[in-house]
Length: 195
Ligand code: SF4
Image (cartoon, rainbow, N blue to C red; front, side, top):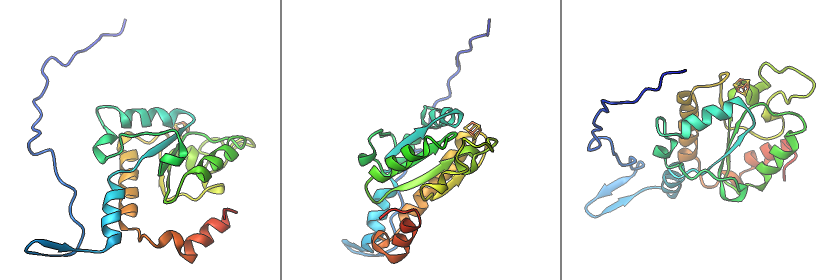
């Protein structure tokens, strides 16, 4: 029988210094005013309130569960609201092996998400098919949808998933509110056959 351990000497958390405000964007401040770009304010709000949609098909999904649980706690980044309705989420997190039969479903979920939307590919399987170089497995989800951040590993530890998440936050915070209407973005979607 496996021994059960309890933490009988819990360490007191020093929460006074553990809570911090998100840093303000670059701008000009003075007595009673602060001026900055609209994109920076929108980016600040978006990056700290991402709503993930976990598309977990296998073992990497277990790492995501650990990432959401109390020890790593993705909620610290403003993302405790995990959703399974694509229209209400803005971050698609793909974790696990994606078979070719599953690819159209993944693509449909992506299409149902409203703009702006971002995608993280978590783990070797989602990024490149991983060890499953077979006829039935999609060799990377970027064959069917555009990906913003790739997290390597088989499986990646929660620290790596959080690192990828923070990379997405950087992208989101710096993104111009006009990017989605630009020719470059339309070209990217067109390359995937998305209008
Ligand atoms: S990358 Fe490794 S851990 Fe993740 S789904 Fe594939 S086989 Fe499982």
